[in-house]
Every structure is written in structure tokens, then in C-alpha cells.
Amino acid sequence: MPPEVIDIRQFNAEAFESLLEAEARAWNTALHWDYSPSRRLIATCLNEKRLSGYALRVQDELIGYSFFFYEAEKGLIGNLFIRQLTDGAKLDAAFLLLKHVNETLLATPGLTRVETQLPHFTMEELEPCFGPRQYESYLRRFMLLPLASRRRALYTVTGTDAQPAAPSPLRGFALLPWERKHDRAAAEVIFGAYRGHVDPHINDQYSTLAGTIHLVENIVHQRGCGDMIPTASLVAIHQATGKLAAALAVTAVRTRTAHIPQVAVAREFQAAGLGTAMMEASFQELARRGFEEVSLTVTDLNAGAVRLYQRLGFETLRTFGAFTWNRR
Image 1 (tube, rainbow, N blue to C red):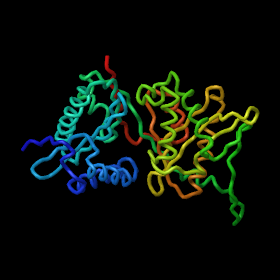
Image 2: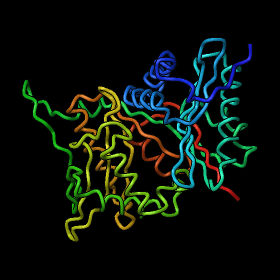
Image 3: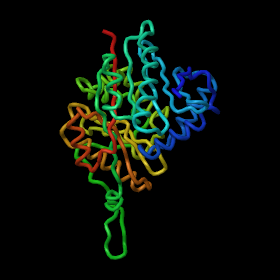
Image 4: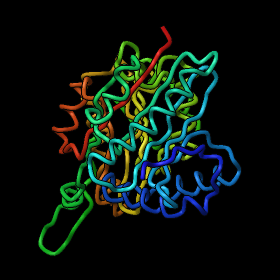
């Protein structure tokens, strides 16, 4: 029996309970991420009829869904999830949902841009759906670093005594916890560092200072990527000038899993090892706090960053696609 495509607003959270539970398991297993906060938010939006999108139903069972929302003249496809099916059936279901989502979005009057990142599928799997509609595609890596080696480095052992080993400071810079007073300067550093970079093509918030300020607010204070870890989130202050030279945001996404949603070094201070020093200091703090691993995402075209993360010990857990459409 072919699946029915149904407006998501016809359902409440109770009807989605089993599907959201399956999605939470997928995030936990594949991405080492506790999806519970997002699951609760989606359930609330379903009950309040605040989600736009479509669900797939076979007989009386929901097998998948996708939702989208608008920010001014931009549309964002926020999610695409299909319950575990055979590979062919899963892709057929994904294509059917995306067909309806794209037809709705691209026909919206005044819409000039669409963005999405869909980590449950590879870029290659979804390219046939997005490519013919003139989307640009970008390969993204989800990378993971075990912290066991940093935990061992925390102590220097002599006989039976163990003393904490402090990370070596980077000469000329002070590493401080990221506090609210640093938000604006951190946003300015991020905005400057991303000019001419590939990521503003994926997320246009990076292309303006106002958008970057909003992005920082979402990460640091709105729990957009987990709960901020204050002692592991750092800023670097250039001691000679007092300038904020770099910023590193670190969040908790699972009990013992941290995530880096943002790291940036001001252009005038790049190539001095500042980013590496900040991350190593943060990794030792995470290990001290009992975290076992830390993840991040990076665009594959950002080859320098990929090489840096690999040198630090990150390995690619999976790849996925980011897709953007602009009205021509």
C-alpha cells in the first residue's frame, strides 16, 4: 500500500510518539546526541499546530516526516526523518516528503532562499532530489574525538602522587571563560573570520554581523546546540592590545558527550596556533569534568580545518549534505 502524504498539522504529539522515539534513538546511536530537548519542542509545536510540513502514513502507522519554517524571506527545512526501512523504501519515502516540502517552499511568494542540513542521510542519497531543483550541495563531516588521551594527560605521576598538569599557556594571550560580556566581540570575530569562507553559502547568518550576533545568541543562550559548558567555552584576549582574538563555544549534547558548535580566530591572529591551544585547553577541562568525547561538524571544502581536526585526533563519524537554493 503506498504511503499517504498528510499535512503535519493534522496530527498531535501523541500520534507522533513512536516516530519521535525512533528518531531519538537514531540521534543517540548515530550522532551520540541526546535528542530529548528537541523531541519535547517538536511535540509542543505539534500540539500547538505551529509546525508546517508533511508526514507519511502507511495504513495507521507514521513512517516519516519533514517540517519547515520561515525566517523573513528564507525557508529552512528543519528536519527529515524516516523510520528504519529497507534502503530503497527509505529513500523513496524521503524523496516523496522532500518533493512536497520543496513544492510548497519554492512556490511561496517572496521567498528568495532555502537552506537545510539533513544528517540522517548522505549527500549522495539526497542529491537527486535537490540537484534538479537548482540547489547547491556541500559535503559536511560529523567528526568525533575520544578524550581518553586528554584525561591521561591531566596528571603527572611520581610514585603514588598525582598532580594536575596545567595546559601550557600561549604566549601573549590570556584564555578566559566565555562570559555574556564577550558575546558582541565574539560575534565580530566570527563574522570577520568567515568573510570569503564557504560556510556563509550554507548558513547566510554568517554573511552579516546582525546574523552572526543572532547565531551566537542561539548557541550561547538559547540552547540551540545543547547546554553551554562555561568552563570549557573560552575566549582568547590579546594581552598587548586587549582585543578579543578568538572564541570557542562548547556545549553538552549528552551526559558525557560535548560538542563544538563554534570556533573562530580573528584573521590578524591566525596561523599562530591559537585555535589549537584553545581547543587543547578545553579538551583537558572536558576530560576533568568527566566527558568522554567531543564532536563537531565541518564543511569538507574547508580543507585546512579538516586537516587541523584530524591532527587533533578527530575522526569522521559520518558525512551528510547541506543544500541551499537561491531564487535566480
